[in-house]
Length: 241
Image 1 (cartoon, rainbow, N blue to C red):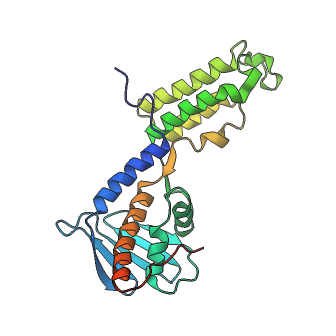
Image 2: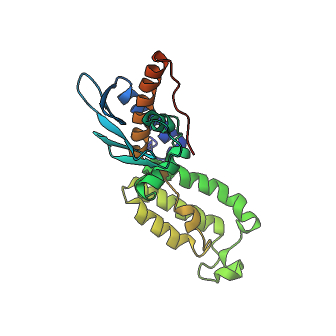
Image 3: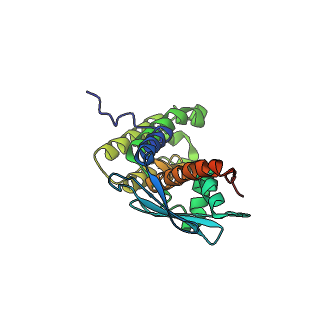
């Protein structure tokens, strides 16, 4: 029987699954006002995944609690705290929300994460694309390409590339850390593709669960506040710069 990890999972599918779980986790959360620009979301029956969402200095938004903390910056021109909630409540995960989290968190280190299933999928996709990328060199021996020397004799680029990718996939399936797998893969491929690290670094990379749950919590609060605004005859804020 084929292992479920053999084909892997695309980053888009993985993120969509996480979003679905996050939205399910927050769908029954209720809002409590703690203070100006400070709200608490909590599930009435058990408090699971409770979180505080706080406006920071009129230009950023902080989320923390029973989920990992996340900070979003920079919003310009807010007239009231609710506008910052609507700002991130409308943000997409892959680009705008990710961008503002990277600013607020000081980089991508904990805004992104690497997932084994996604890495396997990415590696398989890379192997499919490699033939086109190498063109006429794909079926040629490595020794025929002068810049690579003769270290690999008559081994073809196709054979070396395929074996290296397949070995990397097996290594992931065996439970080896992705950083180690990438390092080993680069050692194998650099004789063929010296700049392989430029694409290899992003193998398996997706927006983190931290980011997904934080944005989902803000989305839930935005929905609650928007309903409150409609009842009061006001209009919710729009996305900032």
